[in-house]
Image (cartoon, rainbow, N blue to C red):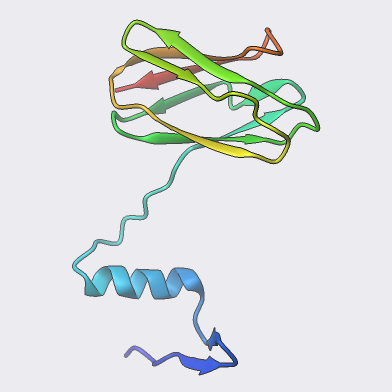
Length: 119
C-alpha cells in the first residue's frame, strides 16, 4: 500500500526525492531501471577511473576536484570536443553518439589521459 506524502512548510515529509521519482516514473509507465551516468573524477592531475566503457548515446560526467583549471579535449576522425577552461568544482557532461575508441586529454596537464570505449 502506498502512503500519501504530507506537505509541511514547502517540503514533502515521509518521502525522499528518489522515492517520489520512482513512483512518478512507474505511474507514467517507466521501469525500475535507473539511468546512471558514469562519473570520472579529475583529481591530482589524474582521471579516475582511467578507462570508461559505455554504450553509444551515453554521457560521461567529468568533475574537476583539483584546485586548478583543466581543459578537456578529444580529437578523433569521427568526434571532436573542446571544453574550454574547466574551473575547480565544475562538472562537464559529454555525450558519445558514435561508437569507437577515444582518448580524452587535458590540454594543460599533458600526462592526463582517459580511454573511452563506446560500443
